[in-house]
Length: 304
Image 1 (cartoon, one colour):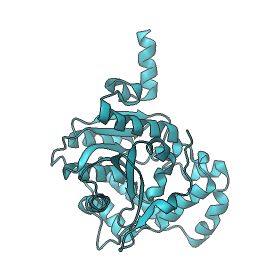
Image 2: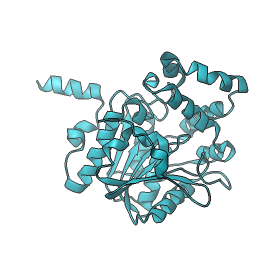
Image 3: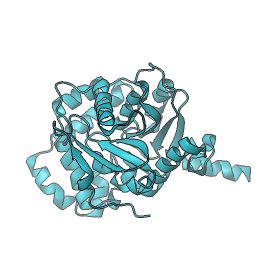
Image 4: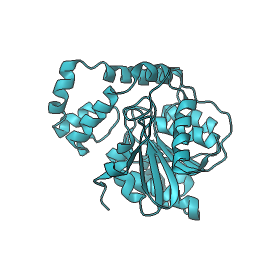
């Protein structure tokens, strides 16, 4: 299966306020919510796994290039409201919500509003304490404050696969696998955010345990995610959504759609198919899908 679809721009709808939303496919409704600093286009590598069965919208969140402007520090309520507005515009009374990083928070917000059929949060942010949140804010501040010379040199540096892997290590385990154009786009999108309001909002984010979520929910963690590591994020997420299943994506970082589109696309598709038919996610029993690949190997060896 190819991991890339060309010509997607013709499926991008632009609202009167300027918000850009990808709207493509037919079937059961699915909403893809992007991570901070990366718009809907970052879902492109995994779309081939979904388009034969699902109608998909992928909105651009407020504060980012292609999204609505922010009137003040971004809040979870505002992120959630933006997703629901696009659901209403697409005619989705409810939908399966898949979000990455900050999009995972949006998935939680939509579920709490009663508009989600199920929710899959990939590398979800917001579950760690204030120290971890401040570390993430600092990372974004560094990206935002790159000097003009570094911005000028970035395309040259990122043209080399080894340098892409080093430069993107915070969010990708295999930065050398993406193209120079994709790497440059990550930097450009980061630079074009409304950082004054985004950073103030990120610093204030807290993962509340109420209201309760009752729809099927999965937390998917990158094995080598340095940005929102499972060890920091999972404990509070499990308190917020006690019934959530957990799955570890092998060998990937914070943006698994780039690190391993096949593995990530299969997980997304099997999760959605499971909601229709009750099959096991990715062919793994629940208790095994929670373990890291190394732990699964040790378990199998001990059993033999």
